[in-house]
Length: 240
Length: 240
DNA sequence: CCAAAAGTGTTGTTGATACACCCATGT
DNA sequence: ACATGGGTGTATCAACAACACTTTTGG
Image 1: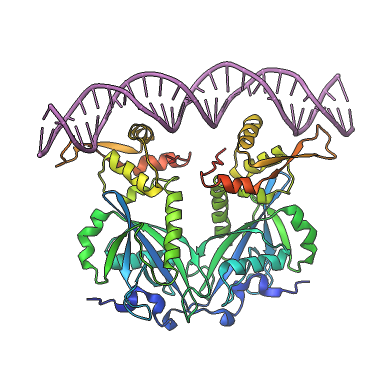
Image 2: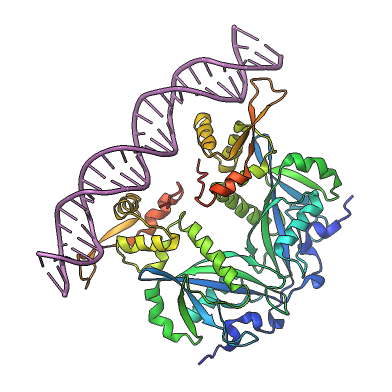
């Protein structure tokens, strides 16, 4: 009756015939600078495509999960811990890497550039921020991974307040608005944005104002993660 | 300067130290029956957990992509081609399978039960539909994969009309409404649902009615994929 | 005083929600 | 005639878009 036998659950099979050359992790690291969304790329050091830029990557070790591997790889470069990290998907095209069969699991992360800058000097890999619309030709399928991550970011940002991870702890409403404008590629109305975002009760107004600006100083706010958790069950709508 | 050397792009490294035992594909196959959402599970035939149910799975071959592998594996069981299939993510917990290091790439698919039933007899694996809220204990981390796929389905169904893949070509508005009610776990107002869905112009009214029902026969509709493609750029909102 | 950005108020329109009601058909 | 689901109409309310306006501050 069961001609396919154990094929129905192949994780029990002997794997010899199916082994591949390895699994890597590649991370799209997003940052926000003034008014533009940027990505951290690293210099390709060895191998056949020397000199080209690519995403930060590394091998997944046998005894760690992909999430752990991604956290490790990112903190090796940036010294940042506990950053927002989310898996994109596995990229498995058989000829995505010449000669060998390497599957990569894509991740994207949102970092606060202010935190990053403090510790960037610890890094020993050549790394550089690129604006989202001036990305060069990258190694392997990294352009594809990047494109996918942008799509994912645009989707996720509408459903959860992940955008806050790109900003400093204290920010103005217009900074936040510019962030959304840049990520979503749309223009927003100042007045309507204020009303909507304040209505959500996710922001806490601080007793502080901007310093050293040549115009009226704006009030600073911080994101209230606790309130968010309480609201999150009902589903918050970040459509702008 | 570049102490980490080629580590920055590990896909160029020798893979020997990192090789894992294999990559499998596991598919959550969703179907819709009368008023309930169901999942197709298969009997675990060999290995240590004999007799247990699990997701349909198979090895990814060295020369195929994960998408191709998933299509192949599903059509081997159901004889269905060209079904709606989407990658969930990679599941990589180091001890998700005892003894060996097997990473699986999860997929979910939406099938039309009417099509499926016709050809089900070709299958040689024990397979059975389970209602979404009566799922037994599954092998490995398959319960986790299933849970994740449900979450994903609920999210995706709000943003694109993928739900249609679960219905026959011709359906009534109330069938469609029940589908959304079941997937999202909410109650909908008949009148408001009609208005909203017809407003979208994604449905084409057919010159046909239900047959053999013991009440007023409802008009049949079909989904218009062309109109959807035209509308899809502006973003269609399937929030109910 | 002017530029530039912060911040407030008003108004028309749209769309969601709730609910009442009529219609067609098989038993 | 009545049960069952199919299908229509309407009043109310909340959210959003557009846009005009006032306030604060540095140069």
